[in-house]
Picture 1 (tube, rainbow, N blue to C red):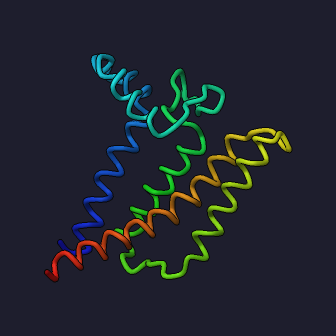
Picture 2 (cartoon, rainbow, N blue to C red; picture 1 turned 135 degrees about the horizontal axis):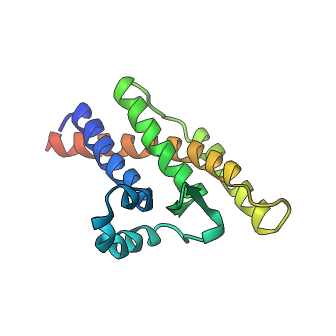
Length: 152
C-alpha cells in the first residue's frame, strides 16, 4: 500500500467518524436514523465523557462528544485534509508532541482545579492543535508499518 492510498483511506475513515459527532443534527435532516442513535451514542461514549455542559450545541441538537474531543477530531480531520493537499508534511521531532500535550493538560488542570472556568472555545482550540499534531504522528507510524510490511 502506498502513501497516497493510506492518506486517502485515513481521510475517508476520519470523515465518517467526524460526521458521527454531529449525529443529532443528522437526525434533524433524516429522522428514520433515530433507531440507530443508541448504538452511535454508545460508540462515542467510549471515547468521551459526554458531560452535557461541555457539549457543543448547534440549533436544537448537540455534538456527541465534548468541545475538547470535537476539537481533537476537527484537528485530525483538518490535518488529514491538509496532508492530501501537501503530502510531504512530516514530523520527526517529538518536541511538537510535547508542546501540544502540555497545552492540553494545562487547560484540563486549570479547569479541573477551578483556577479558571471551563471554556468550550479554549477546549476546542487546544483540542484542534493536539489533534492535528497527533494525526501527523499516527500517519507517520502507519507509513512505517506498511513500508516495513511491504518489504517482507
